[in-house]
Image 1 (spheres, rainbow, N blue to C red):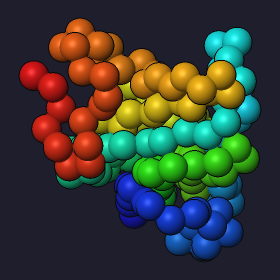
Image 2 (image 1 turned 30 degrees about the horizontal axis):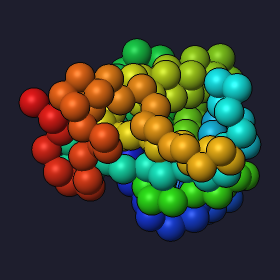
Image 3 (image 1 turned 45 degrees about the horizontal axis):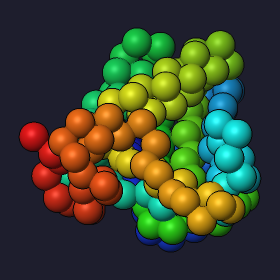
Length: 157
């Protein structure tokens, strides 16, 4: 079982964990990515996430399927937030259940690493100085865009 979702609402790790319970599993591993108050020497006040949702969901589910096949886990899931987030908010959650812990740890790490690099999800940091900037949005910068594409918009060509 797998599911990848984009959510505009606050996440409940307890509720998400329940969706991964399986009597054949003895191991469960989760990762929670929180909004922190600093990045690269800047004081951060808040973040915004935008996503090309249909593509992100399709690719996110591919990543989860790869983790299940590669590590032999039973269930894998990920939910990523979109919209405005405050310091301390949960931005991304990954959970994996498996018969044994080693596979669960490896699969969870694989999922978050792949999600961060492969999915069209953009993060804008708002700094205490009043400035803001899209993080790792090389395609936006390369094409002269001052912002990332909006939700469900095509990414820059």
